[in-house]
Image (cartoon, rainbow, N blue to C red; front, side, top):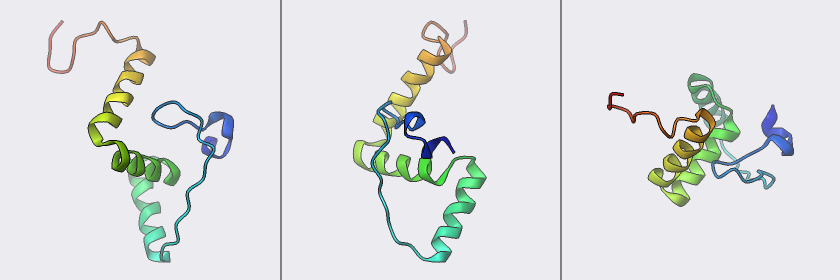
Length: 86
């Protein structure tokens, strides 16, 4: 996976993801985490990273940064916002 390759690993802020965080959990918790990540289509690493970032920086800040990045990628800064008509 690209999360395991440092040059491709990025956080919501765009910074390189090179530091590791570990936690010991029960086998049941690990299995439930794997199931949840499979259901929503992200890696366990991305799931845990997003939980940590929301916990530290707040939901609004994290979604704002992600939304800004998506607008830049899509070149949609001039497009109508959700709910607006062109």
